[in-house]
Image (tube, rainbow, N blue to C red; front, side, top):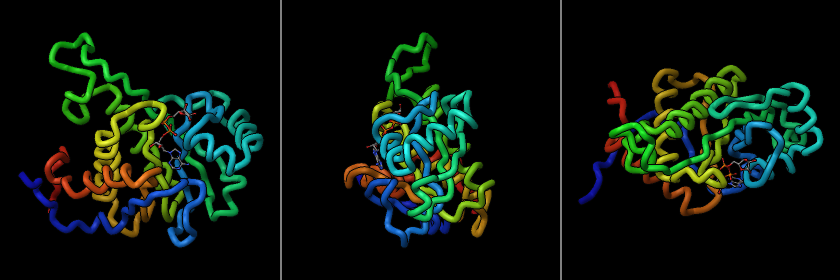
Length: 220
Ligand code: APR
């Protein structure tokens, strides 16, 4: 059975899906803000976090976060830092967000509320925390008047969040943000940065089938 193909949607003109290293994007993407998949202490780590700390300059970035964000960053929130060494790539700010660790525990102790991938989209604690990452990233990018914000697949690496589920949450919230803030509101564009062709295909599938899973009926 072929899934319903979505109708043309102007909001998609503001979304790109690319494959690459978020710290080394082509200049013609015009990205001026990158999102880091951080941890609560903002201490740096592996994956995206490691790459961004290396490219920005770990000592400088860690020093800044220790001074300006001594409290760290709670899961679902965002803390802003300068780009330091990433300024050479035209980046002005790094938005450090901490995604949830996917538990995947079916039994949450709440009858009828599974905590794994059988739960309805948006109905696990981790879904709501990941959604909070995206809404706070978009709010920060709007306040910073970002031209284009590059966002990795937060929580889908070390934190184990199922990629298709995470892609729908990411896309649903970006489309919702653009619905409320038509062009040329900020951020003008969102670039989803995937680390493999397979991961990019997950985002493209989510875009192509959005009418089948998006929870808010699109107006107009
Ligand atoms: N550029 C773009 N995407 C990347 C890069 C990169 N340089 N490196 C990894 N990825 C992808 C991964 O393949 C995955 O799809 O980013 C996604 C997020 O993976 P992680 O970086 O592992 O982030 P996350 O799952 O949110 O786990 C965060 O890992 O590195 C630690 O300190 C970090 O504790 C935190 C945890």
